Image (cartoon, rainbow, N blue to C red; front, side, top):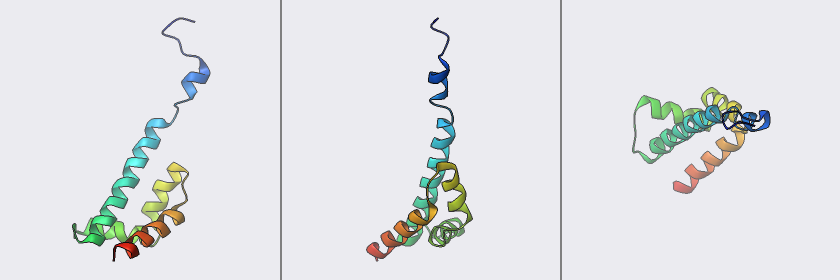
Length: 87
């Protein structure tokens, strides 16, 4: 096999990796906004919406989790537990 050719198995092993990283970053920002809102570090409308969405397991959280094959309800419960621990 020449150096510029990829085996089909090697080529497919990273299929979708960039998209997963992107959605992972989006989810991380959503959670960071919610945390900053709860801590009083960020009091704008977007941070409040992120906080509410995570606590209610809303459409933003569900959309991100769908792309990551992650259970949004588990993340929501974990976030609420984190908030309670921080209170």
